Image (cartoon, rainbow over all chains, first blue to last red; front, side, top):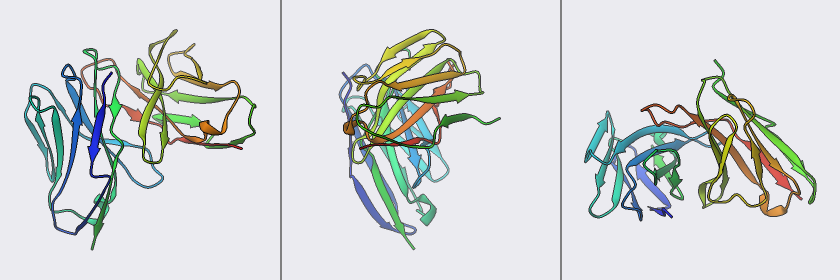
Length: 113
Length: 113
């Protein structure tokens, strides 16, 4: 089955710096890759997603890139702010119906003022 | 519009006791999911349903049962709770259309002693 690995497990940056979180997946048939943000004590919420027919997608300060050949995708956050502090999860959808997601183990991002 | 709700929010069980977690959504979503979240392990899929009356196993189904008798509700049962089932349980739902975002409930924190 699909396996998603996520690195780093923790990331500390200064406010205004950029942050990059990387994920690799094992199933070459996976074709949908979302990123979820979970603030402390809250539920996960989708922040951005990308499909396999697109190499990059941007939404204001966040962007996701996908390299299908290498089977990895990354989340980029620019001009980080303290409110970006949270746990970020990547995921991959291992079947053509997009019915299931396999999540990575999460990255705790801490943005210091 | 409450979105996805979960009952109860907290519960403490003794080993061997049983309980049912209720998930309800008012968005008319076809797909529903149960995940467990443990420190350092991300979100792992327990069971899911792609429609009323249908269920399927996820990554970690052992020790759990589910039922989807009504489209808006998805029940997760623990027949004989074990300390290894101490976790935070999240329910999620999404539509069967082209938008694949999963909407999560607020979570249930379960402790088995």
